[in-house]
Length: 263
View 1 (cartoon, rainbow, N blue to C red):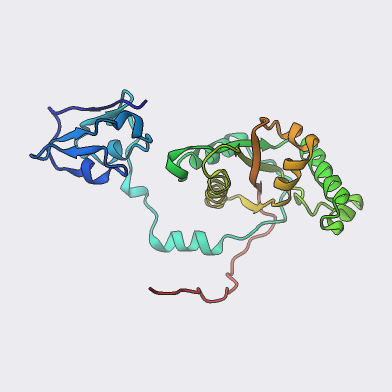
View 2 (cartoon, rainbow, N blue to C red):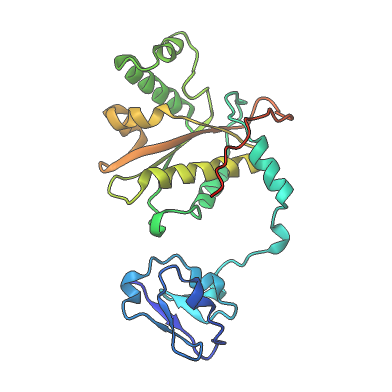
């Protein structure tokens, strides 16, 4: 149960919390002072909108007050042009330097994904990060064996047998997003988190590429699941190779025009 508290000595009756709460848990008492829905504690999804939006810090959630939160720094906001460049010049990187990715950087990037949207703020995403060269090679071998046994893209397993890694491309790190199968939308939550990680990686000088074969192998192969240390009730829903790009991509190839239906 959530605990929402209102400090009426601070409240300026601006009705912002009433309008911002996605579940309408703040009600208007008549003069602009918010009162809580009788089932607010049970219905609250702890998204923190009320904490983030109140201009005077009159609300606390589960004992956390606004004054203890990190405040946005407008000077750090990217320009529309820089966001467009980040999104449109991002490439799927399949050639990496041998330089390992610092764990401190990997941890910081995953921290950013904590703020990616999840269904009803379920925060269902868990991560397994593989950055050991030996474990990455072992994982690649296990996935290649799974693909060979199930006749999935035979050329990938054949390439691995010949010393060529077409699965993880010799990436120095792999981020695996997994979640409990009982979560509301685990596949969407993990995909959004990995997409967020990919863009955060690009902003920090890393290259990334989605590793689609990991999910299927992790669902069916006990050896892969054991290596990734997955809980019994978890499935892998998305994975991302990470590393420092071997090449620099300075030009943007065209894409087909956006297909839009205006209604």
